[in-house]
Length: 308
Image 1: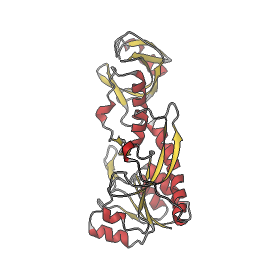
Image 2: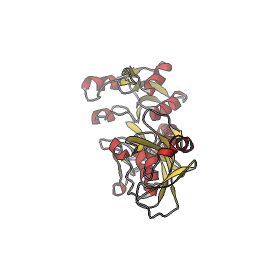
Image 3: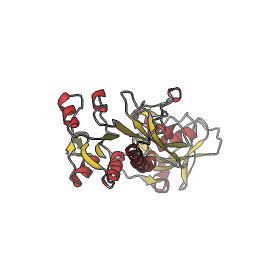
Image 4: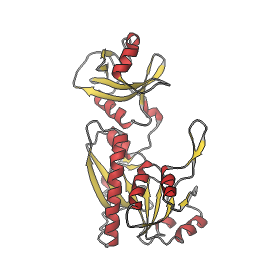
């Protein structure tokens, strides 16, 4: 099939690589305009653009697809289908109807659960034990279109947003290729979503990453895993922000007040919460490296005090 691919970050690049290695013809790659990045704020191409150029694929980077001239360019490509993965731009209704088979989206959740901007983080934050990838026929709503194919995945106990992202990117690429085969064979049976079971994955904010020690330890553990690698959960310590990259809720009850250090050793810094104890395992001070708790403890044991 003749395919237009639209995507921007690493999640999308995994799917694009799978398409490049497939028999399908990629007639164009759409990605967001280059963005300033790094200390020098140098304009940096997306991972999708870098991959596309390495394989001599034509790249388009419009700031919007609302303009008629951009829609005409897209129509002239005569694609069978447009594949969208974490593109970052809304597709107007006019664009959705241009390819012969419309536009399909790779979404990292089992729709209708976790429609929206941050499904991977919200999955972990909520304590879900199962997630997956949905290949969806796009319509004008926010992740509301019928599902063409779903693949399930059972979360590991120590799953972070980074590890889940990487696994779902691979599953999504595999599901995409399977869906394209079914589309070619006219064997797809779109399944409408059950709107009654919808949940929304709101965008993550940096403010959410502040650790509230009055909450239960199990919730804080999930939050820390959900916010790894961004924005990274943090707390105040010694008048500076201490980032917590890894932690584990312990099966332990304490009558100490939240924030109190229950015990500290090379195995972990155990902190009282609103319910239970949280063991800190990987920490980072401003300007410093991410340290295992044994190194952090050795360097700061005399400064730990009674509270974190």
